[in-house]
Image (cartoon, rainbow, N blue to C red; front, side, top):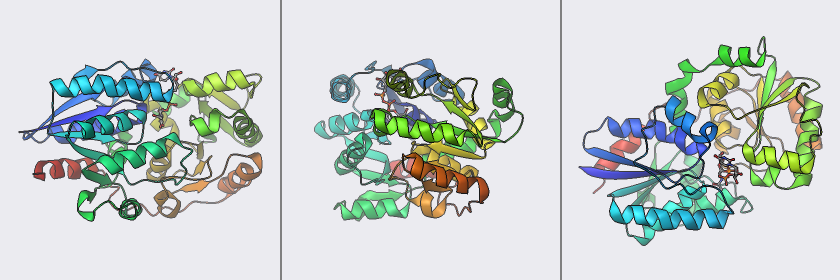
Length: 363
Ligand code: UD1
């Protein structure tokens, strides 16, 4: 029996944990302990994802919560060390690039536990992004690096990671999307928003680089308001973004009732349903660049760089920057042209099974 502890903390981790937990559960020789750091805690940021996606109840919730990033990481390290000293696994598995990923990688490394990182090797090459530092450290400390695409392998090799540690498996977020696609609530969510057809776009913004700098936020909001003259835009607002919008006065009327409609954060199935029926998505998220590629929906990434470079060559993604001057021409083009899709190899719904098989074969 091999004991695996999977650490999750934030919304995108829960989506990936859904397929990873299911794949591990199908193999009796693997036993999984799920540890939730508590980075995300509101029901609409955490609980609803567990319920909808069948993620097992965590064995423990460390209840770390929000604070400055260093405070959050430090507290996660302290709480997780206690947990791992009491329940030491054979393999500590981390996913993605959030603060929980970084903290778990540090604790696992210090305790000499074998570390496996899922979604290794993605690089935006922009160290101003907190997540980029998290990725680099998690990869440097991990013993097994599960990658999504060939460019990620190359990034790791350039950083001196030995080839024998890299296992290309595909994308676990795609596994979850394909498993739940048929349950997506397109009609229900449209009905609840009073949308009759597919003539709408979706906006998501939450990255610190986009929303914490009020001049960047104002530029993006200005572009969105302009774009909304052409197309109804539905904007599920992350709590960080809601606070920043209110503080900056970037959107005086909060735009409700207008063609840029702010709504609360959505559950996975509702958002998938909304996204599946949209004309396009404008986002600063990483995961949505991958999800829109699978759905064949044009994705305008409101950033100057992406760690999912594969979706620029093999997907529906275009970098649109963060100013009205850069965003609006790409938006206009996306309304007119058809984006072609050539799916990245191994984005086939089987990445989690490949990971579970590799875990079984580890010495
Ligand atoms: C985190 C991740 C980011 C990921 C995102 C997904 C890091 C550095 N960032 O960003 O990579 O894409 O999650 O959503 O790990 N808050 C609530 N309720 C919650 C959680 C957060 O109100 O359940 C508010 C708090 O005010 C908190 C703020 O949101 O301070 C930011 O939360 P935090 O987890 O620090 O970062 P995210 O912006 O969510």
